[in-house]
Length: 101
Image (tube, rainbow, N blue to C red):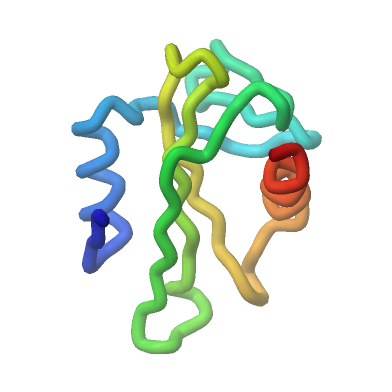
């Protein structure tokens, strides 16, 4: 199982594994940073996830997701804070993904 000490170390490792798109959530759609790709919750899968807690500081808590399109042709990452800093729209779409499987 992969384990990383820092978020930046994990991001670099995943990019080296082909997870090159930088995903964000907008209106319950997963969008690539390039703007070329958009996915509904049924059109992508979470391949891996990593949780980072740094010194119990809420501003340093995050989840990192390695995401692929359903056909695995597009791969990227999504970073989401959690706890008091999590984004509702991101949590909603990730919950929908869990429910769909």
